Each structure stands twice: as structure tokens, then as C-alpha cells.
Image 1 (spheres, rainbow, N blue to C red):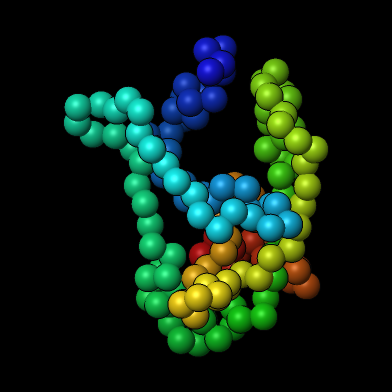
Image 2 (tube, helix red, strand yellow):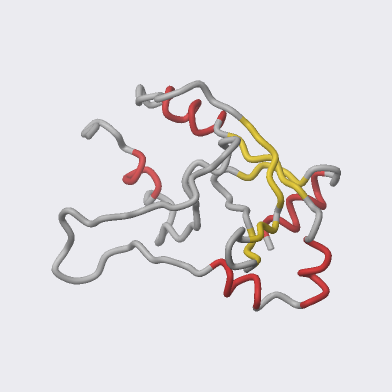
Length: 139
């Protein structure tokens, strides 16, 4: 653990919450199929880790938007994460990479569809102009 890391404190200097959604290492060529989180030490009440169901999120999208998203791909990058870690004298475990993944992924066993984008790693939609990509990814 790096006790000199000021990331969390700096985050809350101009924010009241840290609500962001992320998925581990989506920039890898073959991202993990499963991520496990285990709480070693937690508060007696409260906390700030929530889990979301991306399949449910996809099912709640308008059918027209679901159709529009199919076939689109996005660039996921670990370069910014590496640069941020280096800027804070942090650890870099491997050379940064960027890969392209479908915006909607289909589970190989269940056939369920789910969005596969997140603000931490997804940089742009392939083939879209910047403004279009930014708008759709923010949505």
C-alpha cells in the first residue's frame, strides 16, 4: 500500500462523490472473464462500493439504441492509467496497451448482451468523429 498516494484526497477537493463505473483492465487484448472482490476490512456501516448488472442496463436501453450499438467498437486504453501512476511515483506492473473491443458483448454461454464501455478506459468509438463518440460514450 502506498501511503503517499493522494489520489482519493485530491478527488474530493472539488467533488462530493466519486460515482464512477469501471471494469478491470478492459484495455487488455483478452480481459478477465471474471473479477472477484473480497472485503478484508470494512466499516461497520456505510461504504462506497456498489455492483451493477450490465445485462440489466442493456435490457433497459431503447431497442433502437440497442440496435445502433451493435457492430460498434471502441478503443480501450491503459496508457492514461500508466501515465497517472508514473506521475504519482506509483507502480507500473506492465507496459501500457490499447485494444479495440465491441461496445456490446455477448456472453458466450448465456447469450446475454451487455455494454462494454467505461469512462476509465474507453477512449473513443472507432469510426466516429470525436464529438459523436464523446456524446454516445457519456450517455
